[in-house]
Amino acid sequence: MLKLNSNKLRQLSFYSILIVWAIFIFYQLWSFFPALLGAITFYILMRKPMNFLVDKRKWHTPIAAMALMLASFLIILLPITVLINVLYVKIDYAIQNSNQLIAILTKIINSIEVKYHIEIISDKNLEAAGKTIAEIIPQIVGATFNTVIIIAILYFVLYFLLINYNSLEKWLIKNVPLKNENVQLIGNELQTLVTSNAIGIPVTALIQGILGAIAYWILGVTDIAFWFVVTCLAAIVPMVGSSLAFIPIALLLFADGYEVKGIILLLYGFGIMYTLDSFFRMAIQKKMGNVHPLITTFGVIIGLKLFGFIGLVFGPILLAMFILFVRIYLNEFSDQ
Image 1: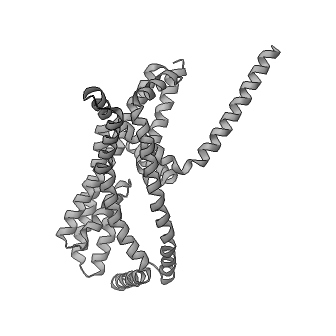
Image 2: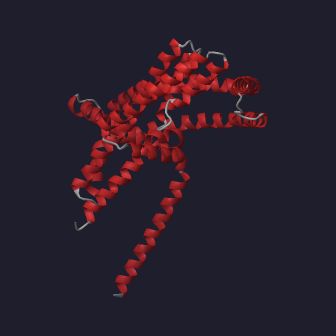
Image 3: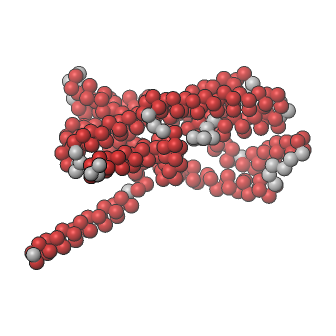
């Protein structure tokens, strides 16, 4: 009995050291956790194509992995980089000329306040906003540099996941302490969730961007490319969606004296864009992953807080996987 207790004590001590060590490592690497999630996401999307190239086409594993990584960069990351660069150039110009921007914004707001006898914002708050904009510059530079590092680590991890895809999955099936059917359930659900969020969300955003660009072109809005990017990015955010783009444009039209165009854009935005946004978002995710809208909404809120912009994709996945693990726990250990 004494020997047994001694072994248990040594085992618990060793477990405690491992847990503390793991928490320390995880804390130090937390800033690169989005890269790991991104690598897992790309791996899940590329798993079947990788299997096809290696097993059916008899490609060498490293060559197949490099080909898929190059394709993912050209099809997914490069267009996103171009869109963000269009937005970044405009934002950078606005920041560098923040005083002029504040003066123009003040003029627009004052004209609206005089015309409609309302108070939108005080001069003091506008001055505070200008100082805030000036403080954003180093944050944007730092965020850009950090994004480059995350993408580099993402592809580094993804390469090793792809070239070891068979042995990795066999190891997981063998060592995960769950029933085989529950391990299979996790794999299937993860595949569905990743496909639903990684493909469904960008498709919805692109549709909203196209709908918005059509309206902006008809109404004669300048710099359609910039507002197209803004609409796409805004459409990713649930609940408010593309209204973050078309409402500011409508206010600018009102300020320039185009009240009819502003009213038309608001009617079009809330009547068509906002309605179709909700419809496409639910329809696509229902079709691809049967994901409940509440999971998507609260998942995005969690993801944004944890991972920033990239959390728009990973947040709903984490929340849905938590619910899945509760189901698996009940299936694995419940007597009922």
